[in-house]
Every structure is written in C-alpha cells, then in structure tokens.
Image 1 (cartoon, rainbow, N blue to C red):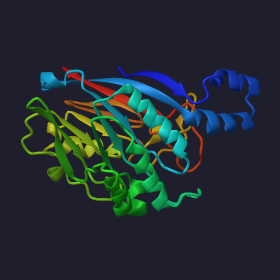
Image 2: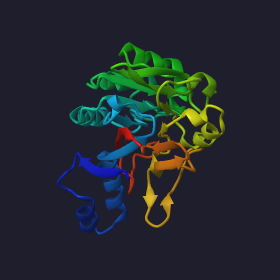
Image 3: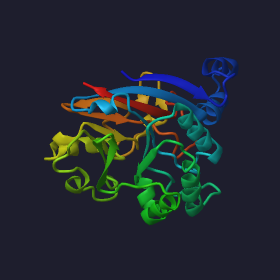
Length: 292
C-alpha cells in the first residue's frame, strides 16, 4: 500500500498546533489552508508489482508530480522546492502528468512567462530521464506554447506516442496520450501493438481509465498514471472533496485496480480557483517497480 511522509516549508508550525492556537476561526483556517497546507508535500511511496517486469527494472523508481499550475497559485519558489525534493530522492525517471499552467490565471505572470518559467525550473531535475504530457489547462491556454517551452528546455512531451525506457537490453514502454478532456487521445497510436515489455501509460484525466480498460489495447497496460483531480483540493472531514473536475470525479486520488491494470492518481502540487488546500496536501509520488 502507498506510504506517505510529509515535508513542509513550515516545519515548526504543525496543523494541529496551528488550528488549536487559532481557535478554529475562519480566518485561522483560511490562513492555514492558503499559507501552510498549500506548501506541505506528502512524499508517497507506492510499490508497483508488475508480472512481466524484467529483472533489471526491479527497484526502478519513478517520481511523479502533476498539476503544477504556475503561477495560479503555485509560486516559482515552491516548484523549486519540489524539484529539490525530487533530486534528493534520486529517482530513475521523473514523470509530470500535465497542467503546467492555468487557464484564466489572474496572477501577475502571463501564460507565456508561466510556461517558460515552469519548464526552466523543471530543467534542473537531475534524474536520468524526464517525460511529460499535457493537461486540460495547457491545451485550453495553448498546447504549442507549453510544448515549445518544454522543448526549449529539452524536456520531451508525449502526445499519443510512446518511447522505450531501456536498461541492459531490456525495456518497458512509456506511453502518453493527448489530453483526454480537451483533445483526442488515440490509444492505437499511444500503446504499442506488440510491446516486448511492460507498459506504463500517462493520461492526465483519471476517469479515462474506464475507456482504457475497454479498449483492445487496454489489456496491454500495466500501470496508468494520472493527476487532474487535485484529490479534491479541499476535503471536508467525513464528507470528502468539495469540488471535483469533469473526468476527475470517479477516481479521485490514490491507487485503483482494474484486473491487470493499476491506476494511480496523484493529488498534484498546485491549486486552481482558490489558493487553498485542506486535508489534501500536495503530493510527490515515488512508484517503485518490482516483480509481481
């Protein structure tokens, strides 16, 4: 099962101590949700058993982040902190599952600057390989803008395509769709017809898993990685998330099983609409592959 540890930019002010000290006032909760909880990071360790995993990939570690949303309301310093945290973990591969920027951002960074600033910070990742896909906000603002910003920093984007991740003559296949909410994913182009190794699929919207498992090539997929939902962003105790986006309402966060295929939904590191998180910390997931 996934195991979480928390990293925070405010280590001396815990959630419990702050809420008790503020007397649970609305102002105190708003300040906590916007200034503290939004900058905590849950580092979630997720073991991934794969039946046909080549032995050379036993213990292979994939760091996943999602939904950066620079600069509404993710500040550059927080993304830099996340990248520093990833580098300290020394993963073999980093995957970013979409939404680098925000449609209709009201903050001072325009979309062009935000896309290039996000890519610039991500270029300081030290993992041997990094791959990305687009999210619905990226496409809504300008897919060419985001793709160009990432390519300028030599960060590849998978759009209805796949690449082999190779070690000592063995491989698994890393696949990425076009955004499922705004564009036209094509699984016939995204997933190889006869893969000679496991298949890991990146799709921004998690509810697209239902389409994957009913597709003729869905049975080839071992692991699907998504984001988009933010885990609800604000979760009310005993009730769950206040608001969920389209195509992120069924599989909200964490791990799900569909026969052979596993789905993991990352809560993202940014926010949309309001700069608040409550009971739903930003997430950095480390997926460790091992034979089933």
